[in-house]
Length: 501
Ligand SMILES: NC(=O)CCCC[C@@H]1SC[C@@H]2NC(=O)N[C@@H]21
Image 1 (cartoon, rainbow, N blue to C red):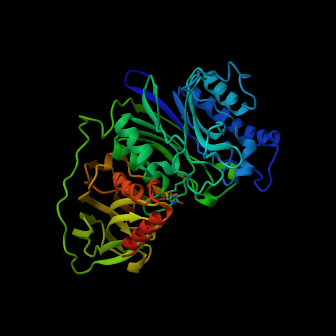
Image 2: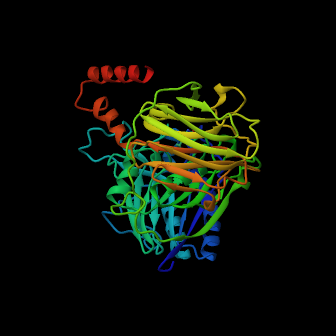
Image 3: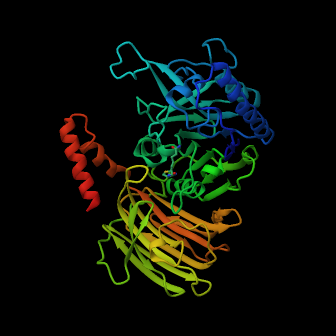
C-alpha cells in the first residue's frame, strides 16, 4: 500500500462437496478442509506475488454449506475472542487444541505478509449461567476471521442474519465488527447480512467504515439480486470499497465475485458455465483508492437526503406483475424514445430513455414501495427499467437473462425515503450478465444516468432502496419480547393482513 492506494484480492472458490449425510470424524473433516486450504494457499501465494495487502475468501469456502447441526460439528474450532486476548496461531499453535484451520490461515497471512479474511465455524461452549444455551450445550456460529499480515487474529464476526442455516446459531451478541488497517477502516459481514440494518447501517453510521470485506455464498436471483449486480450497487450507494468473495457452484447459482469501488466495478468475475466444479476458481486483484469516509459519514459530499415529492394518481396503462414476490406497478415503454413515470404507494419513479432501434422486446418502468416477504422480510423501495422475460406483461418481473435491445440514453430517479439507495445496472453479455463500465454512468442521491447509454444490450437499470430503519417497526411491534405469545400472534396476523391488503 501507499499513501493513496492499496491492493485487494478476492478469491472465488469452487469447493467439492463433502459427505454431509453422516457425521465424520475430526480427522476426516480435517482431510476435507485441508483440500480447500491447499487451494487457499495457492491463491494467497499468487496474491503475494502481486503485492496484495488484503485477500478475502468466500462464506462456507472451507467447510462447505448444506450441513446439519450434527454433520458440521467436526469442522468447527474454538475461536478465542480477539478483544479478550491477542493470539497468533502460527507462532503459538498449541494454545488451544483442534485449531488446525486457524493455524493454517494465520501462517498463510504471516508467510505472505498480507491480511486474510476467511469464513469458518466457531464452537463456543455455553457459560454455566446461560439460560438459553442450545440443547447440545454449545453454540455453533457462522464466523468470519481476520488475520493481520503477522498472522495475529485481529477480528472475528458471528453472522447475525442467517439464511436458512439451521446448523448455526445466530450471533448472540449481535455485534457489528470493524477493524483498522494501515490502509483504512474495514467492516466485515456475511452474505444475507447485507440486507439488514444491523450490521450494515451500524457499520456505515457508527463505525464510519469506508471498506467492507464480504465472504458470501450468494445465489444469483435477477432482476435485483444477481450477485455482481447487487454487491457493486451497494458499493456505489454507500460510497465504499467492497470486496465480495463468492462461492463458485453455478449448478446452484452460486457465482459472481468482485472488487467494487464507489464508482463501480474495478474487477469482477462472472462465469456460469457448469463444467467440472473444481475448474471455476478465480483470483481477482485490483488497486483501490484508500477512502477515509463513506456516503453516510458526516460532512461527506456524497450524502444527500432527497425529500419526498408527493404521490401521483395511477394513470392509464399501469399494470401489476409479480417481481420476486412483490407486486410491482409497471408501465410499458412503447415509443423508442420518451419519458415515463409510475408510482407505487409513496414512491414515484421517473425515467427518460432512448433506445437505438424500435422495440422488438418488451421493456417497462416499474415501482414498488413496501414490505418484501420472499426469502427474507424487509422494507424496500425500487424504481426499475427492465426487460420483460417474454412479450407478456405478466413476465415483466421474472428476471430476464437475455436481451438484444441497446439504449443510447437512460436516466432514472425516484422519491426515495432514505439515503440507502443502490444503483444497479445489469447488461447482457457472452456470459449472460455483465456490469456497465464505470465511465458510462453516474449516480447521485437517488438519481442515476447513462448519458450515452451502453454498448451492450440492457437487462435492467434500477434504483434499489432499503428502508432499513422501517424494519424496526417489525421487531418493535411483533417481535418485542415483552409481548405475550398471544399478543405476538395477533400482531403477526394483523401484519399479514396489512401485507395482503
Ligand atoms: N448465504 C447467504 O446468506 C445467502 C443469502 C443471499 C440470498 C440473496 S437475498 C435473496 C435472494 N435469494 C437468493 O436465492 N439469493 C438472494
